[in-house]
Image (cartoon, rainbow, N blue to C red):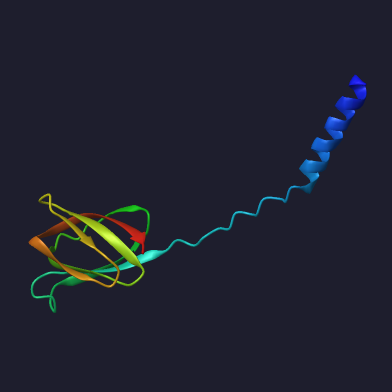
Length: 111
């Protein structure tokens, strides 16, 4: 009787294991980027652009003092300035940086 019960349990577990669906393969996702424009004063003469990978901290090496930051659609970003200021810009926005300062790092995410 004991052997029959163990055999039945093993058969049941084997049947359940074989009936379980296989896990879906992990899909590789291409890295998304945030399109960012940094504007000095006056913006027509002093600006630069960067493509910043989302979900990654990025150093900014341009020393231009920034007055406005624009982020393209599809991403939001957090920026840190050299004087301790911080600026958050959401998808499609242009935000004033106050007081104007050189930006030293950025962190972006998908929105």
